[in-house]
Structures are given as C-alpha cells and as structure tokens.
Length: 197
Image: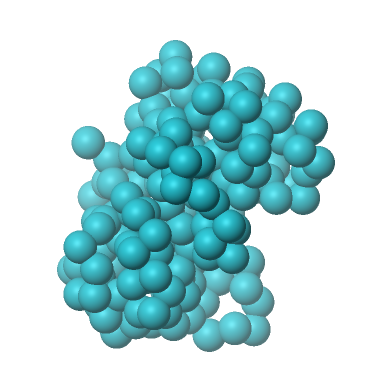
C-alpha cells in the first residue's frame, strides 16, 4: 500500500493533464488530491468528474480540493480543505465525506483540524521547495511535533524526494505528498517506485 499522496498542478504538467493523472493513478498512490484552486467552480467540476472517473478505474482515492459545493454535487467521498474553508463546513456537509483532509502549518493548525473531524492532514512545507521560493522549510522538528500532537495520519509536504523521504517517515509521518516533481517528471513510474523505497 502506497504512502504517497499526489497533489496536482496542471500548470506544471508537461503533457496532457488527464494523461498524466492516468499515469499517476496506474501507480496506485494513496490518493490523488485535485488541487486546481484557480479554476472556476464550473471548470473544476468538469475536470473533477473526469479525474474521479480515472481514479475509479484504478481504485485510487480521488480527493477533491477547496470546492466543497462541487464535491457535494459530484457525491465525492473525499475532500481536502485549507483551514479557513474547513471552518465554514457544516456538520451536515462533513457527514457526506468519508475522507476529510486539511492543510496545516503549525501544531495549533493540526489540533484544530483534528477537532474539526479531519481523517488526515498535510503538514508543511517541510523542506525548501520551488513552490515556496525564498521561504525556508519548517523542518523535521516541526513535522515531528505535528505528528506527536495528533492521532490522525500526517503527510509531510514540500521538497520531498527519494533522497529525503526516509527522514519524513522517521519523523512519524504516515507518508508524503508530491506535487512539482510528479507533474514535471518524464518517468512517473520510476519516481513513484523510488519514493516507495
């Protein structure tokens, strides 16, 4: 069972986006988070339906991101939200999701996400990454503290590669998220295998 969550960014993708999603799904990651926050809800819904269909074929968890109304409309089982959007979700809306994730950047964030009923969180960014140019990573001590503070799975995010993923796992994380490297690589299968150790 993979411990890698794949996070999409179609702008970094070097081939047809749905082709890339299918290549990733074929590697059976722990899930694919469809993080295309700049789209309109209508555009996102069309894309999400296509990605959910691909994930369904490979029996991979498709986790929609930010657009809770779209997720409810598509009867999606999983959603990932920034904390400010998680706070706005009603108990009734939460009940529709089997999987509820949130992006956390501190121990306080993590505790709040857990209290809101999250089934997992992402914590980052752990290492320096091109996505957050000029911002130093929060580091392994940060990740260790977050993992120790909550009872739900924590996935490290930010600057994680085959050469440092063991450090993320040994800090107590349940796994890691990949975005830029997975969107840009010429060898999706090779990268996923390398991440599995």
